[in-house]
Image (cartoon, rainbow, N blue to C red; front, side):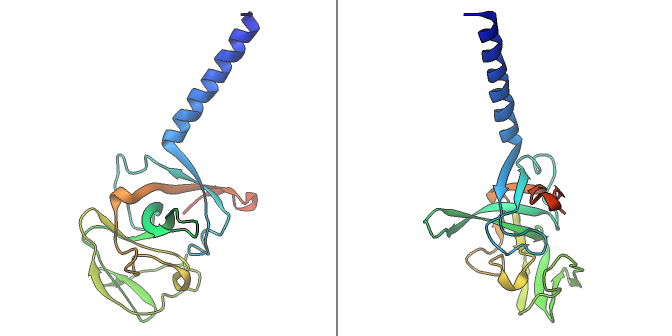
Length: 174
């Protein structure tokens, strides 16, 4: 084997090793629905941190992707992207166009419509669980819906931290 071939094989092996290492920490994801508008839009290409909660806890305001029992039209597991509204021990309710956490109305400038319609009696977020909602409150299946409910922290795939596409919106996700 020539020296040039050995170098070429070594470069490929290093590239594969680096790629595998990156995939352990970062997961690319494409947003498939409208439930996070105006923050994220359908076909946005985002990166998730798989290790975000290794040394810290999920916080209200974080945008996460998580596993659900819901199915896509093809019968596959549906992943959802939502914003954390409540963490263990928080009480969450909805009335008069606002979401209340621990009795205080949230300031939510990121919502699409600027208000949250409907009414939801107060619920307490269980231990190791999270209450999540989409930013497009009128078009979101989230913790208000019994098919989702409060999600277990074990269901989290990762925390959204960077949008790569569309290029005019490239940057961190907040």
